[in-house]
Amino acid sequence: MKNIIWFFVLPLLGLLTASIGRAADNRFPIQLLTFSAAKEQQAHQLAADLNLKLAPEVWQFFQAADQGDLPTVTNIFWRLRARAGQYEGSMNDASVASPVWQPLLEVDLALNLFALGGTNYPVAFGMGIIQSIPAGSIYFGGTDPGRGLVTALCKSQIKADPFFTLTQNALADDRYVTYLRRMYGDRIHLPTTNDTQNAFAEFTKDLQRRVDHDRDFPNEPRQVKPGENYQMVDGKLQVSGQVAVMEINGLIVKNIFDHNPDREFYVEESFPLDWMYPYLEPHGLIFKLNRAPRPQLTTAALDADRAFWAKQCGAMLGDWLKPETSVSNVCAFAEAVYAAKDLSRFTGDIGFVTNEFATKSYSKLRSSLGGLYQWRLTSKADTGDKTRLRTETDYAFKQAFALCPTSPEAIYRYVNFLLSQNRTDDAIRIARTARKLQPDNEQLTALLSQLLDYRQQQKMKAAK
Image 1: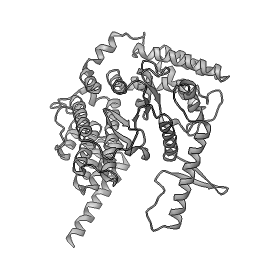
Image 2 (image 1 turned 60 degrees about the vertical axis):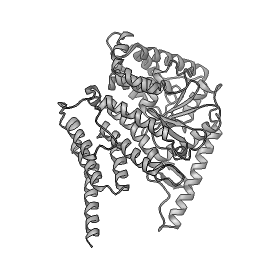
Image 3 (image 1 turned 90 degrees about the horizontal axis):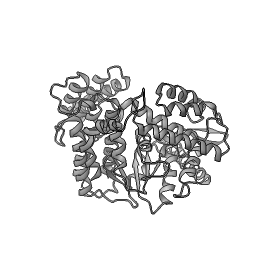
Image 4 (image 1 turned 180 degrees about the vertical axis):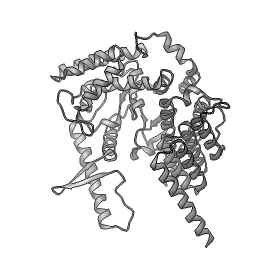
């Protein structure tokens, strides 16, 4: 219910945030500068407790952040990032690559998200999640907004007020887990170094099994997933790439989930974690991670999710998008509003469709929820009404595409769903509209060509 209330106060956010004031010469709410000061204090405490000698630029970063000086913050951040040891091509400089990187990163995320999105929608996004989560819960924020805005807008992320805020994306990095232990370790169970090593070992063992299968049974479906990069070095399997790292992170999330049985869990998805799907159900903007697998989503849960997102999309896009709205009409809307910039008949929030942060962020949330529906639709373990699931999957992906028709996730997830339902013409409509919005995107050009070839092959088969 809190999520629905937040929906109605969205138009008032500009007035509410203006009333708390702004620092001189910047466009950030005072709350962000207070957050930055708390993170600077946390960084000093971490440095003292861990006996760290940090680069002077670390403290210059926080001084600039405390003043809301975004250009200086950004310049220093990117210089430090090259020495943080956790990004491709970055060196591992001990004066930067430490647990103190985390509060610095969280400040940078918050300031840049507000700079990108203005005030209203970043606040609505962060508070929409915060207000929906019971006190004392454990929350995993996967995307930059899901982590950065929730961290910044909580009453006190450091004190876990109102809940514990983590990200699933960094758990394979022991420096991040050390940061969590220093902040939360006396109140919730967090993985030990052995737990992290065991997750690496478990994933590597399973990957080796699947590599062996694909080698020994080349005519069977491949078990190694796209993006699971590996190589043999001195007879041992070494893994790399985002997909593999996220699967290891997923195993560590499972460890935290299993060892905190008295806490409720909530998740904002970055990459899908396969083990979670049976436990997930829609929860406003995000997911609730239930303690036990759900054999099906209840009618009440499906109805609540539909109502919640109908209201969200109604305020943002206008009250025209229904489950029965045709793909052709969705594409016509996208081409008129996002491509032609024709707002003459637009009845939604112009501030939304002209805000890149807002369109991408909310579309990502809706795409993730559609992904849960699609998983249940195809899962033999799900005992629910497949007809209803099919309708809700289509509606969620339709909304995600209308919210941001340039989002790769919204495009490809919806196209794949439509193909699975033998709706090739609709898949082509989505791809064609997406390419109109991004005519230089070679991947979309290739996608449209493949879909047109596939339709022609279907016609030729039917004619035989």
